[in-house]
Length: 164
Image: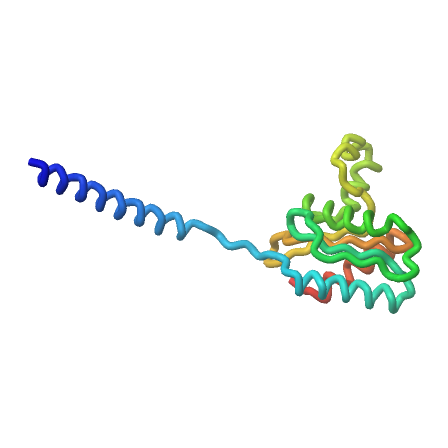
């Protein structure tokens, strides 16, 4: 009698393992891959922005973040006019990454009467651009130079070098 109950336990155990393996195999097929921003690409963006800014004599702070807004690379060029530029650049990059659009979209919202946007705790100034790969936001680049127009121009030049 014991051997029969042992046989049943073994049979049920094997069936459970088989069903579990099948469920795992099915679950594996439903997992999607997403592109990520690696350090090499972040460094390329930062260096492209630095070279562009240097060529135009616009020393600045540059920050590149991942899709969660976490810093991957940052630099403040010699002669950058705003001491707080490093924090501003990182804030602009983080804003662009988390909101999946240029940081000045939030600035426009505030200027357009959406005052509640200031409670978001992000930097709502021109100069932050989302970084996209295959149509998905994988990070952000933020620039703090001398003018909002220059900030955005440098960020867009860096993105152009990375391509999509």
